[in-house]
Amino acid sequence: MANSAQEKLTDAAILTAIAPLPGWTVKNGKLHREYKFADFAHALGFMMTAAPSIEKMDHHPEWANVYSRVTVDLMTHDAGGITRKDVELAGLLEGIAKKLL
Ligand code: H2B
Image (cartoon, rainbow, N blue to C red; front, side, top):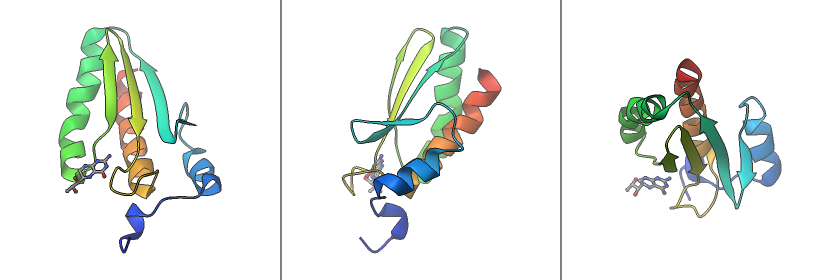
């Protein structure tokens, strides 16, 4: 793929990229993180706060909410793997979550 942000990263590059992001792992070929907020309002607040930036990035998470928990999985579907865009989105979500945790 021509756009380097959309190139699949090597396993080593992924681990280096997520090293500064606490709680993020690789699971089933996706960047994975489970957030536990104080309650449902905080969990939903996290998702609602992140939504406009996600739309602007045009890069979307696979995520699910159960009460106070939000599970996030990131991959680039167009590339069939993890790319810099996923790392970028993980960083964005982390910044928003930090203020609500
Ligand atoms: N999100 C994710 N996670 N992966 C993609 O490949 C992707 C996306 N593609 N959001 C975008 C939308 C694509 O469909 C548009 C046309 O850029």
